[in-house]
Length: 244
Ligand code: SF4
Image (cartoon, rainbow, N blue to C red; front, side, top):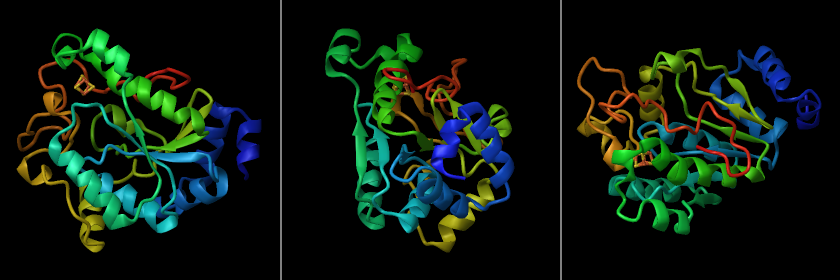
């Protein structure tokens, strides 16, 4: 099946066909198929350089270090995340980092004090994450996410291939659990995000991420105390100027 075939059938059908055909592939083989076979030159890994990001970043680096890796610099990341990002890029030899940033004029108009997260986190995510990512992804037909099924009840239902507007999202790690991730990181002697050992199993922006207690959902520390569970990158169509 070529990338051309995928476009011919439309994304919803294409995603379903891909799922049926390739569901048994292990994650590294699935990634190679997506990067080299299905969407050569037209797929990007979107990475937050968060708690488990090193797994996919390492897999992608083994396939092609020039694969585009999109990082959205929201302006609200932990300093530890930015430092970890720089160290991983160097360690893995990644050569095509695409940095997406919020529109400066929008930030100046709507969030000059960097406190919009407190009053309207949905709008904050929209202008700091969703819009920049949507623009960055205009260059690609498909993107790779690091979502895992064990993270939340909602994510437990994720497919490997997911239609999203005119693009297909590839979720190679949906079937992985925490032990799989730890095992992969140990096997390849990869550096962990420094905040994981401090009680942060899921890491987003600094103002919206708190420690997780034993027994809690791994993403319980994200937007704690609010009904919000996702930044909006997923579950909406990321077409031009769309949202993250
Ligand atoms: S996670 Fe918080 S700080 Fe980051 S963009 Fe969303 S609301 Fe804003």
